[in-house]
Image (cartoon, rainbow, N blue to C red; front, top):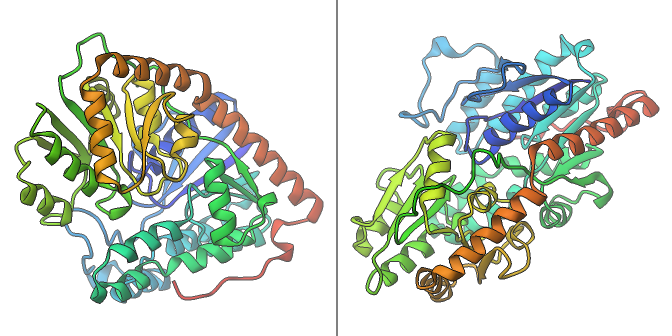
Length: 426
């Protein structure tokens, strides 16, 4: 099978999208399929040598160290670039729409080279153009972006709420596009329910295929764990990840425990998380890192006594599976898909009420004080990672959805025969 895998952002641990693209593409080629990744910036790292990469350049308006930059006039190449810049200038987020339009333009010239197109989380209006050109389209929706919007709006100051609304303007496009793609993948039953509710898609469109983990890389270490070390991963410096609640818990725990927090996150300079760390007086025990390689991240997980996932919502949570594979006991919020991923409460993790600092503090304290509890939870998590989550299984289940989409396109002549264009502003 010839597969075009689309991802508007693909750097490893960029919200998990890069991990998904890297490992799914490798799993697909292991099954004998031909895979070409089409990606916007930041581009994927360490793709399997058998996977081809086609770079889909944008204006890269959010690149470091100059996010929200103003490009030079000579960088503007076409009307899509103009749309991207105008959307950013009007406080919107253009990448899902503009990436999909660029990908549609590329695939219009190469439609005979692929059997199926698989979109990763973009849900841009260009996908309908791809379908109208006769290519079967499958899309992965890790979770509905509407959940992020609700939490960000709740946390925003009154004067920022209009800007938050505008930033998430692309969510309306994603809803309309999702309703018109017959074959949607998602990563948990919880996410499937939320997508059906928030996006208004039929449950019959959704297929649940969980994410996987490299259990040869993420595994317990032969070295002793660092006493009192807690690890937390945050793909974004936003209220959704619940890091502020964890920082308050750490500040309370330090009075009775020797501990440190390893926070793997790209924080906004002088942003809310950095300010809170300073206000709580815990700068000496909070160590921040970002841009870690998979090897470095695996070693950090294996060195920690506890992994904490305090999110207010998760559509899946790769860090949860990576922690389980590492044999690291977990304290996590009872939010979104986390109970589904981690198993029944107490089996592989201690689950707490989202946003409840007192409950989070107590759960972390109990684990810090009980080596037996940590050992039991860690061993149970490792067994669950080996039994339930593997990229080989993910690839095989994904191929079955591709086959359904191709068969559907064969029956109808083209997937897009009953859809209409989506031209709403981003």
